[in-house]
Amino acid sequence: MSNYIYIHGFASSPHSRKADYLKERFKTELNISLEIPDLNQGDFSNFTLTRSLAQIQALLEGSDKSFTLIGSSLGGLISALLAEQFTQVERLILLAPAFDFLSLWLKRLGEDTLKQWQENNSFPVYHYGEMKTLLLNYQFITDATQYSSILFQRPLPTLIIHGIEDETVPIEVSRHYAASRSWVELLELPSDHNLTDVLPEIWDYIAKTIPALNLGAGYNNDNGLANS
View: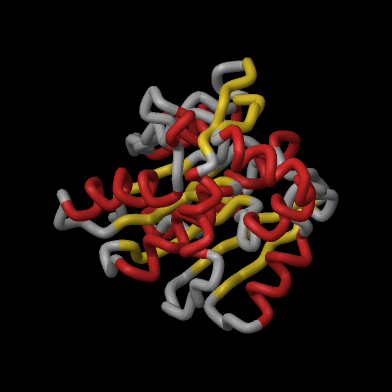
C-alpha cells in the first residue's frame, strides 16, 4: 500500500481543518498514519515553491515505497510538480489545486502593489495557521516564475476535487487541466475554495481510491456507504 502525504496550502499549516480531519480519518478508519509536513518550516517569510519541493523530495527519496500525495490548493500544485519528477508518486488527490496561481495572484495584486512589494522585499500576508499577518519576501514571486510554464504530462491516476463556488482558484482552471488529460477525474462539489463544508464527501471519494478498501468485506463510512 502507498504511503500517504498531505501537503497543505499557502499560508496554512499541518493543523488546518482539512488536514486534521483527514489525518483522523486515515488513523481511525484505516490505521494509516497520514504524514503532514510543515511547509512553513518556522520561517514563513522565506517560503518558496523550491523550498517546499525540496522538503517533500527528501521524504520521497528517503523511502523505497510508493506514495499517494494529497495536495490542497498550492499544495496541489506542489504535488503535481513532484509527480512529474518522481516515479515513487503513484497517485495524486488534489483539492482545489492552485494551477495558474501566479497569474491569478499577480492579476489580483495589480502592478502598483507588486512593484511596492519588490521595492520593499516584503508583503503582508494573513497566515491562517498562525492566525496573524506575517511578511513574505519577494523571492516567493521570483522563484515561482520558473514553474509557471511546466507542462504536466505524466499519466498517473489523479483525482481533483474542486468547489464550483471557488473564487480563489476558479473551477475553470481544473476543468481546463482535466479536459486534456484522460487520466484525470474531476469531481465538482457545491463548495468554495476551503472545501471545509464537504469534508465527509471528500473522504468518501478519497476512500474509494485506496486499494485496501476494495478487499474483504468492504468498508463502511459514516454515511453508510459500502465500497467493495
